[in-house]
Amino acid sequence: MANKTTTSPEQVKTGKLKGISDIRRFFYRNETPVYFISATNFNLLGADEWIKGFKFICYIQCFDGLHPNVFSPGEMPHDEFTSIEDINNYLLEHKEVIDYIKSRSKGKEKGKALFLMFNERTEQLAKKIGLEVAFPPAALRNYLDNKVNTTRIGNEAGVPSVPNVLAKVDSWDALSKAAKGLGKDWVVQTPYGDSGHTTFFISTKEDFEKHAHEIAGEKEVKIMKRIKCRGAAIEACVTRHGTIVAPLMTELVGFKELTPYKGGWCGNEIFAGTFTKGIREKARRYTQKFGDALRKEGYRGYFELDFLIEENTNKLYLGELNPRVTGASSITNHAVFALSDAPLFLFHVLEWMGQDYELSVKQLNQRWAREENIDSWCQLVVKHTADSVNLITESPLSGIWEMNHEGEIRFDRMDTHRRAVEMENEAFFLRISKAGDYEYEGADLGILVMRGRAMTDDFQLTPRAKKWIKAIRGKFKSIPIDTSRPTSPEIGGFKMM
Picture (cartoon, rainbow, N blue to C red):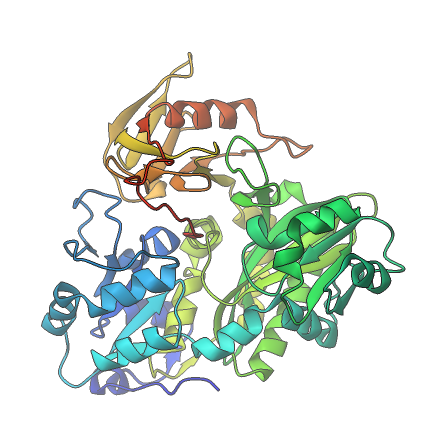
């Protein structure tokens, strides 16, 4: 089911690329327009430094027009956005975007389009304006993104999930019967959606009744034994030469300082010492197995797996699959192992460039597994956590912020890259919500990226992380909106990353 790729005359002249240095040079001399089209440029920050002609087309102007490779069109009337797919489709139909892409076209050669999220309509709109979507088809991604299908693929590949059953559940009795043998505390997941909204912790009939309308309508759900665990994530890329695997990261989940959702993802930390060598190696093996299974399904390119590590036994279980770039991609692609060779996303783009190449995936994976190639970074996704709706009147700038000994922060300098963070008293902040936007429960305010760790050894937020969260929140000013009045705005939220 993989998409066909095109080969330009410029690419034919280069011949087969042999190894990392050739691949890097190929992209430094690239003449094919490559775009990341999304709500923000967060997921692929820094990609424009690796690929000549790489541009971001974004709805949200995080850098106030100061980023040299971000294009954001003027606002035009549109229906309320309910997803990132809606935003991308809006952008692809926007006259300013169409004119911008046409102005950069290179003869008959198609430009390449990357998305965080897209659907069949996105594919149609991209094709209409001469872009090739550099990802497997939306239909295949949608199939793989189904948590029930992910579980089955993992089972076949030898990547185990937490003890579970897959079943239709339309009542408390049906759930009790299906979950027999899984204890008395269960975690129920519906096929689609992020963990903050579609993972339900159920022990009683009352628990079930709270979420019955979301569970009963599904043809099949995943019912898991509830275990005490911590989350981890790993990103990888299916290539023609095998599956390239990045190091294992810790996930930040459910911290009330960051997210209103009990099971909601709210950041990542990369620190080799978090996991034993055995867990890191097993995660890599499982990811390679899963990548090989995805290749058989017709998938190629970037993906991410969430793992669950049982605290009492250290058993490693498959959590879920994201067949795409993710909110963790910024951490993965800026780490030392990536900068010394090439970032993971570069191998994804290479698969769609119509260019033959040689690469020892085994050697690359061995280098990336070394502990000395894993530097320590963290990112915190700051959401509006209160059950309220406010109009933002002031918001902090994107760039480098500095904290003093009293925990107060000041804006130090404009920069578009987390690499500009030099000290542990500095942080890179990417603003998402600005003055004039609405704060509502779950709305993304921005992302803090820092050197060092965000969590202690027992997986609690560090005092430093808490100070930064409090300080950056303090830079947002807002006034309450009376949502009971007929003239109040209609507010809806969706996952931005």
